[in-house]
Image (cartoon, rainbow, N blue to C red; front, side):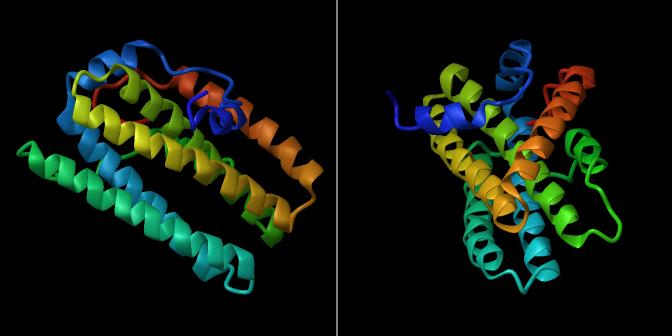
Length: 203
């Protein structure tokens, strides 16, 4: 068994697999995919920082997300390096409709810890979907250097998914977390179903 497979079995609770056409068209448009990927890593780091700032009293969250932010930013730097090696520029940021739609399901209002749970679980699902897409690129992209790159990042995203779910269970009842995760998994599958297959987006 490959070292990522046990984590992957934990992660791939996703209700819908990526359309197989995605990896074919993405691999033919690698500049846009790398640019979008760079911004995904930047946004992931920003999300971690925002949660630290909003919940500074939660010691475990601060400690774990500090490490996660550092890793996400290191990934951003690595994607930039892959762009530069291929003669590409970063380019402008793109709207991530997948993340925007998922974020609308974070419940707002007076329940501060419930909102934290939703934020952590939405972040976990984004990591899970990224892991699934990285696996496709690892296995099918013709560039061997990028294939190795995406294998390494796939393993990291698996660990991030687990960390986010574990943090949610630190601050809310685990049964409530599991039930909410199932709700959000269904929503995530519906979002993926309704989004077009694009050659210039990681999600």
